[in-house]
Structures are given as structure tokens and as C-alpha cells.
Length: 238
Image (cartoon, rainbow, N blue to C red):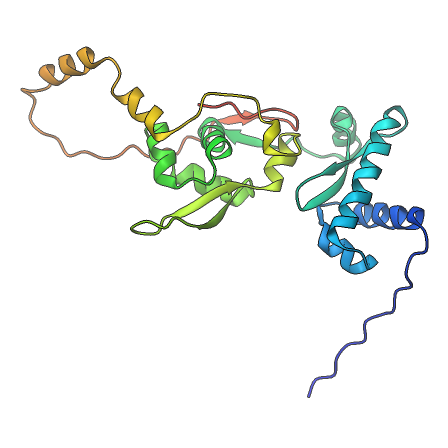
């Protein structure tokens, strides 16, 4: 029978200042987003209380903006201590970091469709873009910018996709409400686009009527032309 490992006893923090300092230390050491519930588990606080303290800390960083090169970013379930965007070139140069953060134009289109319509299925994305988007969807999944969020209650039970907290961080926003306003990207809109200019469509049909039938192959989106984006930029709706 395996023995249970002893968990070290952590003394409760007496003051709010100590709690803030502990949260700051945890976030600094982590270097990545930390969940409010995980921090609360360590400090003996509820996720709601941790989020409230983090909000106060973030406001303090903002109030003393000219004194800090870092900022505290808040998200629905996580928070992260990060450097300010304007110092990114200096950080890259000092640490010898190669410039990264490249997305193809097709991936940006898919990301915009997901961001403005989530949760969405891949067939919805294909319909809006008019091309097979499986490659771009898989690329965004690998990069952690979108994720699966269950299945649609429909024949075949297709997977539903949503954006992630990493998507918010990459584009420099704290919630989806901060996305710029745009026309809704819907199936109806996609269908109306396809049905626009009926005269041109009829003309094309007549012109190709005499041609022998050819086997149809759905176009596959594999374009990976680099489109460089930085934190704070916004996804552009296709």
C-alpha cells in the first residue's frame, strides 16, 4: 500500500498586502496564466476573492503606469503578469529571441469566423469562407487559439469550436466584448453572398452548359503565407 505524501503546511497570510504580494510572486514565477481557483487553493481563498484581489492589483498597475514595465492581465478564469507591448523589441534583443507570432491569412479568416460566431462547427466555417478549412482549423488548434467545446446536438454530432484565453492574450483584449463591431458572419449571410448577382450566375451556367461534366474536387485551404501580428492587433473579419 502506497503511503500518502505529506503536504507541507502553509501558514495563512494575515493581511491583504501579504495576499497581494503572494499572488504577484506566484504569477511572476509562473510566467504563464494561472487559474483563480488554483491560486485560491494555495492561499485558502475562493476563486471569486482571488479575482477581486487581482482586479485591485491590476488597477494599481494601471494607476502607476509610468513606474512599471509590466502589467497584470485579467481573463474570465485566469490572470497573468506580463511585460508591456512597447518593450517587446528591447526584450527580444536583450534575450536573443527570434520574432514569432505568424499566422497565415487563411488562419486569420477562420479565427475571425470563430471569434464572432462561437461556438461554431467546421462546416459553418467552410460555408462562410467558401473553402475547406480543415487545415487552418487544425493549425489554430495546435497553436491553442481555438479549442473544442463539446458537440452540436445534430446528425453526426459535429464538434463545436470556440476561442481560448490565449486568443484574448494574443490580441490584447480581456473579453470578447472588446472585439470591434462587424457585420454578423452567418449562414444566411454566406448563402446570400452565393446567391448574389443571379444574372451573372445564369450567364455562367449557359456558357458552361456545352462542356462535358468534370469530376469535382473541393478546394482545400493549405495556404500558409505568413501574416505577422502582434499583441493588441485585432482579427479582421473575412
